[in-house]
Length: 533
Ligand code: NAD
Image 1 (spheres, rainbow, N blue to C red):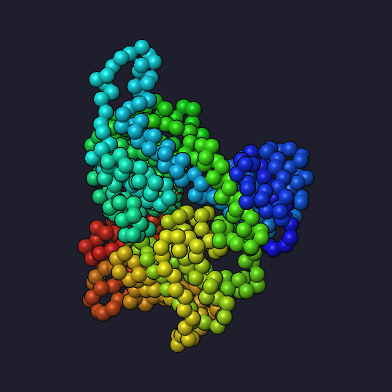
Image 2: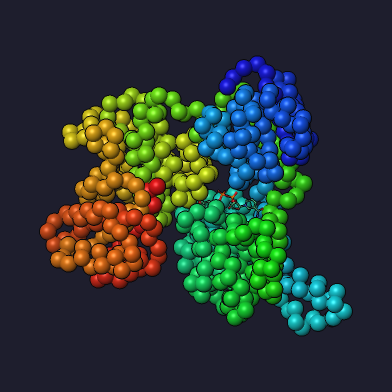
């Protein structure tokens, strides 16, 4: 990527004043065309090395094919829904985003909503405008001395915690990746999700939308909350079950709620939410401040500069320029590493602190990409699949305080290509291993101390059970009764009649109801569902 001069095309009205890192570097020529529908934009695109957009310009295969020199696309903001990551990766174009610049603005909106919700500001305002003067109806409560329950304590959750502390609130947080050091720094108490729900007066969500966060605040979660508590969601639509919030406001289980983000945006003109009282609705305003727009613009300008001049792709969200021969040859091994990472994530609900990736095989080039793929598998279920990739996985693991070690081992006695993940987790330690059969067929061959033989694909149920007759039949019956087809069933035990582990690969998805039904079996002590991809 390195050369002497670069053209960067900037569109979507990205704040020009904040593009200092590019304007101040004489190697750059910046072309600003505010509307990408203008003919000037297409002309400039043909010569551009870098492109900076917000959310208006659709960066799809068609646009990319008209940009023969392009090597970097920068999104001034977080979400990259308007950028086709795969099409960009296929052309070796790195896609970068600017996740930090809107942190404070979003935290401040969260505070605005919490205060307005608890003191019923919007309703009081509407009432005064109608000519009323009803002070008794709008009696509120103080935040001082109450408990904020955070679900997700990353950048924004952390800033919300600091501000709520300043209001005299106690803060408890559920986040598998919150370290003791960061919790102490933020003066928050780490807790399990149930504790947060049961103890908080205000629950505030600051998580990405992933399989594990979708519907995390549903009717069961709300039922666990204190009667008369509050919920605020400034994270992603889909994290909160909107209908369940509406019902809980109607029944009085929730005293108030505030939503900035929705399952479908823009919110339907006739959405029932619009008629719910004690509910504040804002149109995805978290990052809508002058400061946030400028911060994300300067953040992305610096990232694009570093990518073009220094080849620094540590912020890349896709996988550019890795379609080399070596990586192609390693593909089955890398997918095995990713599958093991995903399984490790599912088996470590409290979060991972250390990961050791050990490889025994014939390639001298495998260990680094294998580690990146294992970290990708580990982080994807937590951060969302489009927020982590081959290039960014190591960087994101480091940011989360996960220590990573890589080891090349001498050849394995039984397998020509063998990979092992050794993890230190919140709960203790975990060891998983996989191998390639016939150089191209990945298998998971070990889970903890149990030897298994399972293809790392689709959905895997891992059960711990007593080794007694009839368990396999009973498990099969439960899965069958939920219309779930078993692809592979591998039962392993350490000793006859003792503890056993079943690794069951199934077609389709396995929901909470099925998992609960498996746990109801008296012989089953643990049931984990991993989506291996
Ligand atoms: P971040 O990555 O810094 O923090 C997210 C945190 O969630 C991480 O610490 C992660 O460990 C945690 N997490 C992941 N899965 C979890 C789970 N199942 N349970 C509990 N915690 C979990 O991200 P951020 O910058 O703080 O952003 C948080 C959210 O806010 C994102 O969804 C982002 O897209 C959204 N956002 C919204 C707006 C807006 O305009 N409303 C603006 C900016 C960001």
